[in-house]
Image 1 (spheres, rainbow, N blue to C red):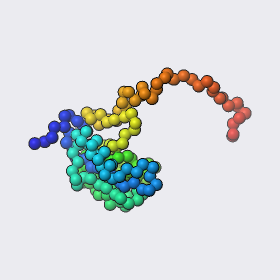
Image 2 (image 1 turned 90 degrees about the vertical axis):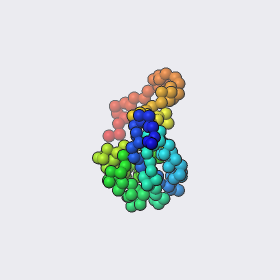
Image 3 (image 1 turned 120 degrees about the vertical axis):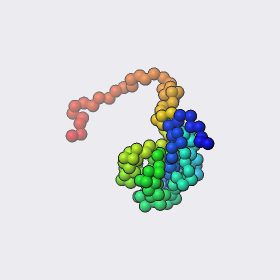
Image 4 (image 1 turned 60 degrees about the horizontal axis):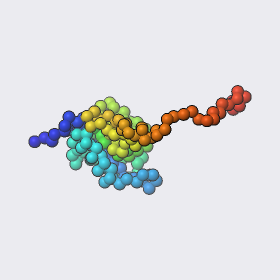
Length: 164
């Protein structure tokens, strides 16, 4: 008997999880186990199925595509075994400005495999029905307790103040 997904975006589709151990220089040192738990929770909330053979991890340095877990994940994506990918944060895959990350994101787009981040920006959440990242209605109100007003002092440079 299949599990009731309640019309969620995942609807029992296969998802993979990727987690990488933090390096000593990482600001946020979230263990692989904590990353996996957060990703599993989000995948379940969205209705995706994650099997043990679709969980990929690496403990080595975060540079390059030579990581065995990432290599196995790429193979699973190329073989069509993955219909969605969950990671704790984008930098668990690779540095934001790196060629490996660009290549991976390009491959995900090409194969139409959505990428979900378990750690969403504050004030946002995933909508289980659509999988879209949406702003929490109260988050904006809390951030903007008083109305915007122009600054008391505006500095406009004189024409002869240019550095060129």
